[in-house]
Each structure stands twice: as structure tokens, then as C-alpha cells.
Image (tube, rainbow, N blue to C red; front, side):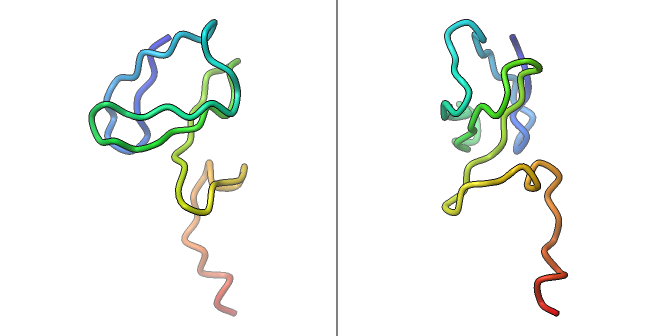
Length: 67
């Protein structure tokens, strides 16, 4: 199944039958590490040094943390 990298919009060809949730793949174009979040529907999210959680799927600016 083809999806696009959320960082650079490069098409990614991921074989859902050969992939597991939690698996980390790398975008060939920009080098971003992407974790497979769900398989049905297929969804990937960038992995950074701190990881991610479900709220990062709709990245916010974190402005509320400064209060």
C-alpha cells in the first residue's frame, strides 16, 4: 500500500502483510524515521528522540506548557 511521508510527501511503498504495528521504517527521500502506528488504516508518524504519543498525530505547538 502506498502512503506519503508526513515530512516530505515522498510516496512510501509499505507492504501491510509484511509490516507490524510499532515497526520503524525510514523514508528514502528525507531520512525521517517513521513508526507504523496502525495497519488498518495504514498510518505512520515521525519518531523523534522523545518518541511520540497519540496526541502528536495532530501536533500542537505546546504553548500551554509555558503557563
